[in-house]
Length: 493
Length: 105
Image (cartoon, rainbow over all chains, first blue to last red; front, top):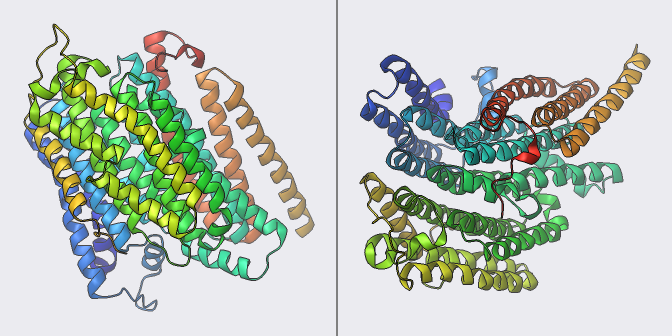
């Protein structure tokens, strides 16, 4: 029974943590820089076994609705089970997290060639993935806090991996300060919620907020609710990069090692939005419609700030950092425009997966260019279209997806979000969102122009994909993006 | 006894708000990375105090459990933060936040 109720639901997280700890032990036993293949295999085993565990969990979930009979349960097990919640949305997020981690591991193996202690990077990545899973499946604010910290702390280290590079350390410091401040605000928000409801369980808080709203609550209670909601919005805004709180994103994304940036932009955003969805659509479901205008303005400001600031960048990493800010705006619009009576997870999930695959694929290609040509200024792309046709075709696909040009999955993702907003009668949001995408098209097309229409700079090293594993990652992301474009109705729940 | 407890709750309330305000002020205006780190810890501890106070008022134990986790995580956070700051000091020989301005634009 313990196997059925404890080990199986926790298996996706436990397998990641087990592999991470095993990697650390292996490093101690075999010594630094030895048994590299074995360490890589153990690292890849983490997300792979996690995916396997997700399929087992989904089978047990569909077979038996877990009826908790309190009597034949040890008390700790009941308490434990109440701290997290697995449903189809969470399981899809688990799969996505495992897949993104797998790609990030492959990229780290292929591109971070200047590190001898790879297993450190691998185990840190696995810990981050475990934290993200805890975060998206948490049903208790305590677990939210633990998951967020398990996700953030190894990421600070990963950003500052290049210890002798002042830029990487500066990026790590900025990320650390902003991230820790967000943590403080999150704990404060948790304290507010705990003070008003006397519990940390999210489902209980959901029920209590609904009760409070229906029973014409007193002013101070709704004030405290609004304060905690604002604090949570700011804390989440720091983590997922919403507009007034996005300042760290370009600097951190530029300073971090390129494969790590790809991982941060895809997986951490995914987990952050998983939490944002939980907070705004589940926990504050009953008060969402009152505050949806504020959330919508936040989303619109974010997408305009991202797209306008990207226009005057010349470094590819910064361009895609600002692009990721604008995408955070669209994703947040999907949350702001949700109908509280009939929650559609489809648009958000579809956008998250398409955007994550696009971002990871792009950063795989950027890593190839950076490793061959030293830096990522826009002109490093000149003439690449004819030198490396397949690589450039993949980059073209990712850029068209990011810009939202019609046949790609990026267009469909934006279309679903706008459709959701339109069905809620928010036509202003739709018009402004489309305008912001049109601004964005300019800088995306600029990248394509450099790729295909500019003559290559003289004395530029030819591009070589030295590590064949890189191709696996890039082509897998491209295949994923194409697959999503062909299956627009994938998430109808 | 009860009267004593309520007055105590009032005072912890005051102290925690003051601590949080001090921490926030320091976080926003100080330029020394170590002091900023200390201000972050101050804010976290202020929230811890609030959590303990609420747990006392409501008679539930969840808040106190959360405090234990927050303290543990804060220790880990300081370890990471000090590592980053120490590394920057090794490269630039300063911990002044205004001197870290390479990434911008």
